[in-house]
Image (cartoon, rainbow, N blue to C red; front, side, top):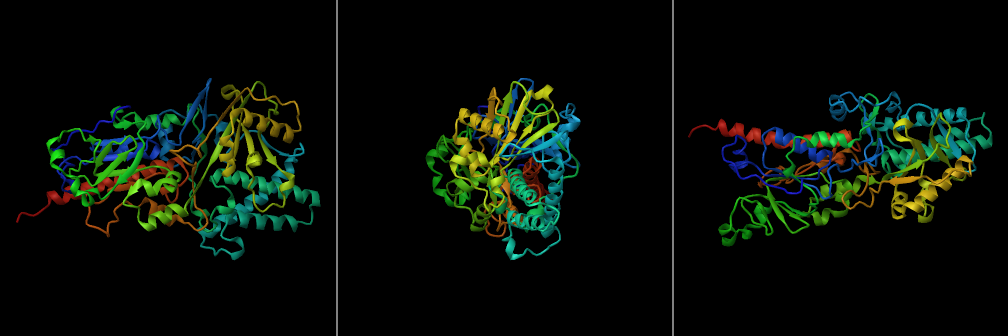
Length: 547
């Protein structure tokens, strides 16, 4: 996948008459993640032959990163197929036998994901005591009852009260605290434990939402995210198998690795007519890559970091919301429209990282499926944010990977927000020691050995990712997802060639943002958008009356 060949112009293809270019439209896809490969696969399948994929990193996959570990595969990125009925990722996995070895325990139906539904979560306090199971279940019922209330604001158009500041975290903390304090049957110590558990649940919720804090998640929009019916599935061979299935029918020369893009120059033909020079005409050849921006009727110029320019009729941008937030000013020329910039700024994305610890022997009991960290001294905190030296207090839990026959004795820890970035700055030794001390403290077992191996993700500091996945931040809405997805130039604003720059990726899907199926569907959506415009133009061309 090291070279990136562009096919020569075609004049006899049924697609060629579209947009009056009388050749195959040249399409560049930026990013070889789920959205980019899904778009590319559909385009190639439907007769578009002049398609190139530019991937900044040295591998395909985007936010899918499966690492082989002995007989097991560890997922540093996407882990679960969320729902089955109508989920294209599920059907791709099921149809190709990827779920044959998924155990019953790995078909989780719980809202908060674990690696297994078997066993019991151990809620441990920072003084080394385990919270009784019946107390955990009692609190869990209360929390889930309030969680259901957070869904009603969007689903039922329920007005949001000013006290909640339109924040899921503020609303949840306020309602749950009031219910706890008004319970006449609980002692003061039990109430304090429940208040501390509330903070731990909100940390878990933040990791699931990939938000720095649930205080930043919009209450009025929280219910728009749509869950596909069915269980959550783990792919034993690794989520990367999904990427390989998408890529298997894409010619290797189509995908250029280590090809970061510096700037997308759209409306290029309208603004840079002076680029057409006699020299460029004299040196015309069929290789459509150039170290100089040679304009031959293509409205978009893709300027790469290696100084190469690739001209195109259409560019599908699948870069993450995190990259758009950091780079959009330099990444687009002319600048993006103000309303699209506003959508990028308003929508949220944060970092959720995993910390895998492998041990020689398990120190946890056979029925334990996770160790949840409950800090008793955080019962009354309003903000769950920590200085850099206390980053470890944001680790909400360690899940037990199951089955041990596949994974050995492995735990997977979760951390999100700014504290995840602090963790990424530490070396492996520091993180391993810190996590070991945490486990000793919370289990009350001072003899827990250091892990034999540590493996962790670093999505926040990855320059080509900049975060895990998106969420609707306070002040944003699903309309911002749709605005982000709107192609450039806007249809009613110019006579320039349409669909020059299209946008895909999980953050552009209004109902399925943050998911792998949302990413895949968004790539298919943009490919279909291009197919339809050429079909419409070809239809108009063939039915043109004789004058």
